Length: 167
Image 1 (tube, rainbow, N blue to C red):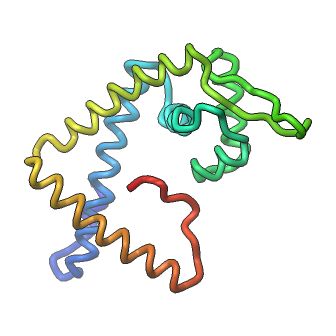
Image 2: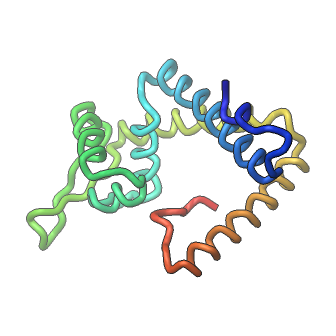
């Protein structure tokens, strides 16, 4: 039974919509996780870490990676250690700070990430294949309104989101 099945007709439409969004997110994420595992023998957290590094060719410090991925430093360290062992990422010393290092993709890591990103994009496009281009654009615009409203509410409450870089 998925999350959406919990809602009943007497529940507000907004609640039923929220549960549908969660269900769709979980279904698409499951497809992505399966594809990464079957085609690349990797995990979504490893893909996510590499995606952050791909966006920052100069590399990122561990605390920056942790913040961007919204996970603990220990999680980032474990994933990084695995990727270093596979020569997909490297640790580079930071000038003037003996305790710090930057993590960046190696050429081997860049190639693998590009291959994974290409398939990842295809999986996401396929997930929305049941919608027309116009439907996708309308849904994107409507969800943008939800995002803007939610961010405004967070700001009114003096709370800042951990990391919401995706538009």
